[in-house]
Amino acid sequence: MTESSKPQLSVSLGSNRLHGVVRADRIRFDTLTQLVQHWGDPQSRDDIIDALDELASVVGSAAREGELDAAVEQVEDVAGMDTAQVEVQAPDVRRLLAELTVVERVTSRFQKGAAEIKHPALRATRRHLAENPLPGQQDRRSA
Image 1 (cartoon, helix red, strand yellow):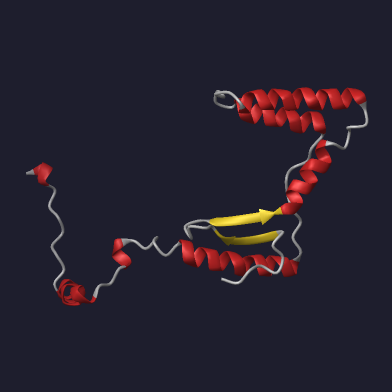
Image 2 (cartoon, helix red, strand yellow):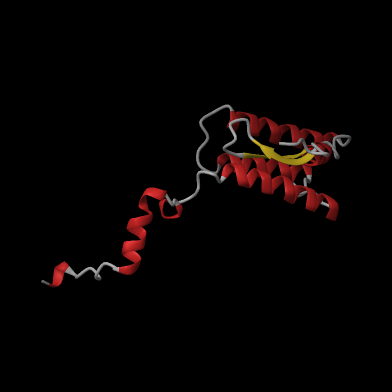
């Protein structure tokens, strides 16, 4: 598989070739920038540090359902962080689609159902059943 021309925004195969990996470095950059944008104001900095401490305690313990999400949202609210998203220009959309197509082709190789597997040894059976279909199953509960 060829490497991406822009690895900082790319889709590739995982090391075991069973999953894809999306890389979007810009999200990490924007996240850190937004996290510290109000750092100069002492009150905002203290609020952000408190929210990060709370998040650290949740991550370090056995969190109850929804507790981790709530702690992350608290950090985002206090720091005034926006949604993690990346604007992708048209040439990069086409490149990402090509990369994703390669990943999809490799990772879905085991997704074929049994009905799609056409073993040559079953050719005669398929031909016979096409010519002589089985009768519809009778409802045994009514008998």
